[in-house]
Image (tube, rainbow, N blue to C red; front, side):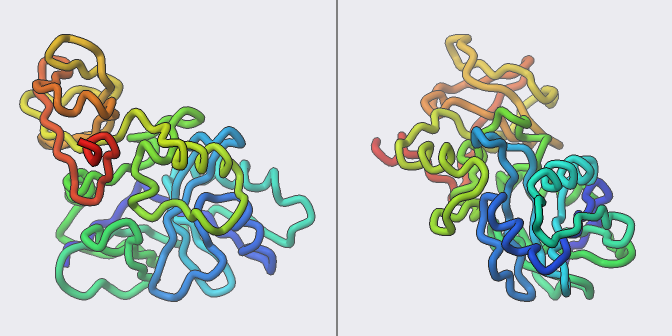
Amino acid sequence: MSLAYLPERGVLEVSGPDRVGFLQGLVSNDVSDIPGGQAVWAALLTPQGKWLADFFVMAGGESLLLDAEREQVPMLAQRLARFRLRARVALRDASAEWHVHAAWGPGTPPEGLVARDPRLPEAGWRVLSPAPLAGPETAADYDRHRLALGLPDGSRDMEAEKSVLLEAGFDELNGVSWTKGCYMGQELTARTRYRGLIKRRLVPVAVEGALPPRGTPVTDGAGTEVGEMRSGRDGLALALLRIEALDRAPLRAAGAVLTPRIPAWMRLPAREQA
């Protein structure tokens, strides 16, 4: 099994007797009952339904542990604290006590607080441990793995207060509960789904040529701008593209040629109707 320590990930601890109900009313997924060995992928949104952060939620004894971008942990704690009111909840940056890893491929995951990555079976496992675990793989190896699967990576692929969850595959990748009831930003998220308002998607692309920087415009064969680059590495990348432009080959960005590679898990309504 491949194992990589992810030093750019941190952990926010949510503790106290009201921790489950508190988080349940704020995030996009159902955290009311997380069994051992499982995790929930969820996002915190603005009241207008735009992405602020996403994270994996795991049950750790008397706490909920949020595996999030390390640089976003202070912001998450501050944002969530605004809604604490009289809830018996404590928020604490526990990044010094828990180290985040990803494991994937055949084999048994290592010891620690281990949970299946809820997005895709091929994504592997999330592993929290008190100390970094030694493994032959690096964070760059995991980055290539998740790019090949088409999985978004937080602020590298989404924009705070601008991105919509369904553009980034949160529906297909089990990042939204459609049955749990209200949470912050729920109205716009539901309306976007039921009215079919998504016009763009975050799509994996093969890159021929030098990897364009994040934010580089993507154009179609006619030179019309149809999207922009997001994260990438070693000839693989994600790009936010207009759905109708996916068949307008060739797509280009800063001299590189892009070939969309639509993963099997991704549902594209326009193509389904064709």
